[in-house]
Length: 96
Image 1 (cartoon, rainbow, N blue to C red):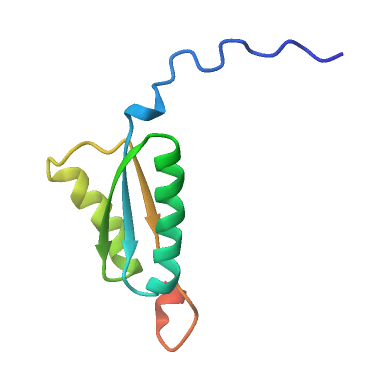
Image 2 (image 1 turned 120 degrees about the vertical axis):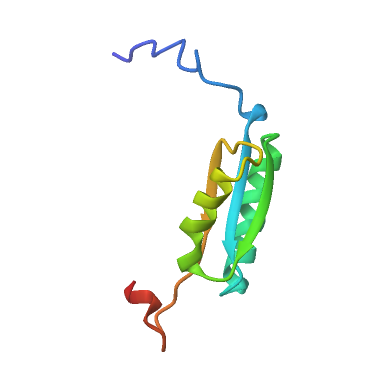
């Protein structure tokens, strides 16, 4: 027999339309990260979420960009979406 479930599942959860999301993506492998960013922006727009994108040179800079943004007194981000694509090749990035 199935239960009625939790009728107050969303109680206390902020409205998603009030959120601000920072998208951080790499310019390296942009043929991949640009398409990922498009998908993220589309989903956020569909849900009424505001966002901003910033670009960093490569994957190694992604965590530093998030940390720096958080420390600079810019608008508080409720979430970060970090997009990078590391492909095994001639550089050791894949191993890092």
